[in-house]
Image 1 (cartoon, one colour):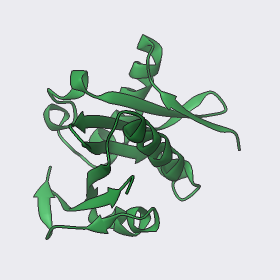
Image 2 (cartoon, rainbow, N blue to C red; image 1 turned 135 degrees about the vertical axis):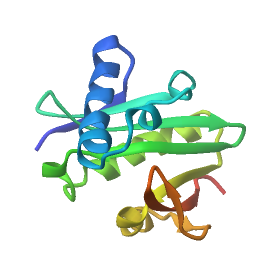
Image 3 (tube, rainbow, N blue to C red; image 1 turned 180 degrees about the horizontal axis):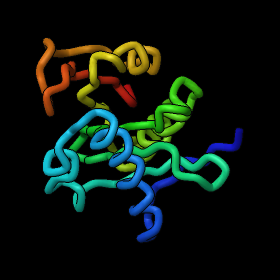
Image 4 (cartoon, rainbow, N blue to C red; image 1 turned 90 degrees about the vertical axis):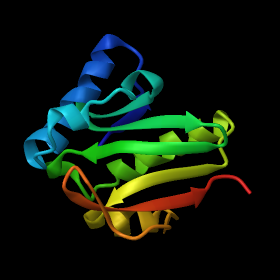
Length: 144
């Protein structure tokens, strides 16, 4: 399995990001489009995962001072638990460090807590609802 993850820069790559996010969040998880696509898109760096030239995963990264925030991380259902999500997170963490961030923060759906824990993230909040889905905020020190 050849998987490539890169920062989405061309119009086609950005369209691929939104296509994967639409499939996972809007179609599969019933998140309203008005919540899924928000005012933060233009201030975010977008990442896209391709398997055999097909878009299969995505994520977005926002930088706020020394904190980076991973958002909208997703992989198509048929390819979950294959390591693609970890590759996306690794690329976003590397970019965050490159941009001077020392901490990565994310709001994880409860079903993804063990995935993020396995990548070194720790829960730092109680359960809360976002788009009707239970989440916890998690953090990871990127550089000490």
